Amino acid sequence: MDSKELIIESGRTESQYWRDLWKYRELFYFLAWRDILVRYKQTAIGMAWALIRPFLTMVVFTFVFGNLAKLPPEGNAPYPIMVFSALLPWQFFSGALSECSNSLVANANLLSKVYFPRLIVPTSAVIVSFVDFLISGMILLGLMAYYNFVPDWRILTLPLFILIAFAASIGAGLWLAALTVEYRDFRYVVPFIVQFGLYVSPVGFSSKIIAERYSEQVRLLYSLNPMVGVIDGFRWAILGGESQIYLPGFTLSVGLVILMLVSGIWYFRKMERTFADVV
Image (cartoon, rainbow, N blue to C red; front, top):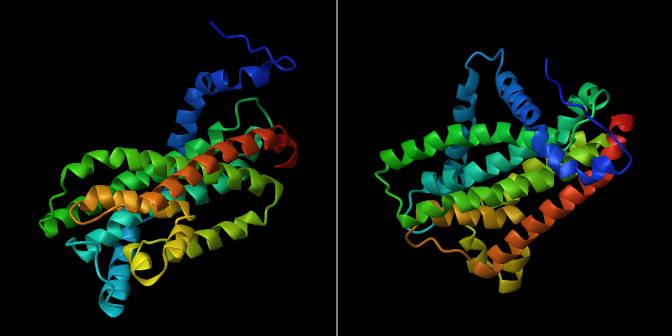
């Protein structure tokens, strides 16, 4: 039976860390697949929850912001499509935060027994939220068919904004995963961040409202929320037509996403050696 010899030397694991990520890719696949299988296990309707939750949220937001508050849609797009084009990246981001933050604590037994790059654990947790994202995308297709809405060429740029959403999810997720190992208080902080973020991000309304009602400085300040750039990008790509991206704010949001990703990797790597002792 062939077996590979694993040699752990002082300083060697540090220099070969990124190579080890590729070497342990099967563990990444296994953890992601395991989490997908158990996510809806023993539920009565299984993965249908991935459709029901965003659909009901879209219905409530359309009723509250579109019908009661009488907020205008973005361009000529139907209000439910405008809401759902923002709900998709937000649910992906919020789901990834929740999965990542608890991923290291949930795999404590694995962390304390064998060596592997710990970065695999939170990044594999993001894949679970991405599967929900893909399933929820079917609702958007259904809404487009119902309202006879045809996107223009901008829809081809959607993968770019999905990559930005991935970067934001992994960056914030790495910070929260490392902090949750050290401070279990973050188990209670993360649900608050997710709930609060849903209402301060332009999910139920268009970010154009900020431009119409507040000054340029306030609009830039609002763009400090990295999900503002992601959501505006999704709407620009999906709605097309009169939907526009506020470039200064978008640039600021994307810059913050990159900073969050780089600093998240740095902090995670810095704390990684202590995980097995603390978790």
